[in-house]
Image 1 (cartoon, rainbow, N blue to C red):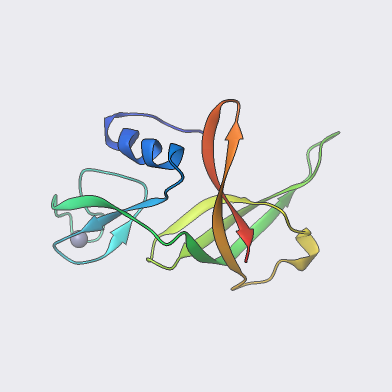
Image 2 (tube, rainbow, N blue to C red):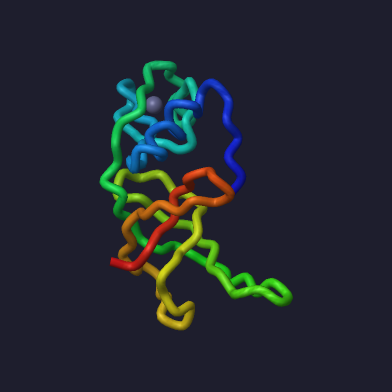
Length: 122
Ligand SMILES: [Zn+2]
């Protein structure tokens, strides 16, 4: 995931830096979304605000990437307990142990000086 740091996502990345995963909460329809936008993708309301998420989720689908000459890694779609589906890396696990609905917890990793969210099995 390449961070695209613009004004809408600046505070989201600032929270990641502090070790908190945020979701975009809509006060109009009470649903959550990611990534941060100045509106709700469910009902188009602009009454949205970032709120801290539990950081827990479940594995939806995943791919094992095997770069030539590098270590394999896992890229996954994860359903957060708060609702949004996010794409992230799953770390600290054997790809053979992955299964749908596996419970995951957010963790943070520094990629070239930028802190990014990753997930690991609980
Ligand atoms: Zn909404």
